[in-house]
Picture 1 (cartoon, rainbow, N blue to C red):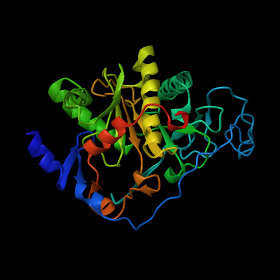
Picture 2: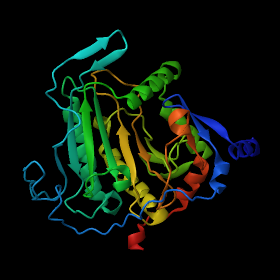
Picture 3: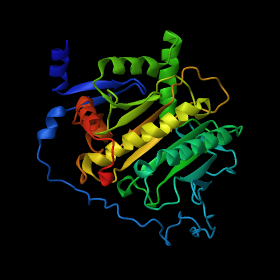
Picture 4: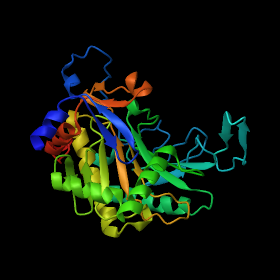
Length: 350
């Protein structure tokens, strides 16, 4: 059976994303094609500990004239240019069931991970990352308890290549009235599976992945990192909790520490891959905060990095991906093996 699967995986084939019920096209033979296309500049990670011109450094004045406190660990504030606004009046449009719109109310926040301008998550200490996790938990609870907030999306865009507008290491939180499209797809898939099987979808999927041990990258007592079978981005990973629980507020102290530990281990591997401050969009999918029980929901975190062949060649989502179907060149198994073999000591410290 293994030989048959190996033969299949070496040829163009499709894989189903069980979290969204969407198909992915895999074309592993395309890695052999020569690359004469766009390359990115190598993102040099040479920054001072403090930048007097940075809007996010302690004590500095932001673009709207507000002065940051001289914070010593983490710092959270309302985004000065938030994409969602909490005081948006209710309203909707429906013209002939063809022009349909609804006002969306929300709160956007910025989280500075550290006062240090030069420290990203993989270079922070475990206790420092644990403080970030504690802040995520606090914000998820506080925002989720607002009656009209039905989803709290916590994420980070790291690196200029991912559109990050400020190099000071930080993440964002968007808390909003509706459940966004990606979590909504996952909600349906997880609900359907739980109703049929009495267990969470990711509980059974994780057990299968641990048994096969082909796509596991790194693990600890509380969490497992793997390249999902249906991964779209070249070195995409998924962090899954070993114990099924729904949201940040369901985590034990051990799981909070375990989450900090697994994020540090994974992001170190990412930096070590091309010995560069590795760009990505990464974010959590906790349960909705809509006041309903969510026994079907299994806490997890996605990492979507764009780099493909080197620090200067990224994957583009164009053409076929935009018009037809998601597609990738390297297999999930290959990506997992590459990441798994990387050291857990940051290249700057070796």
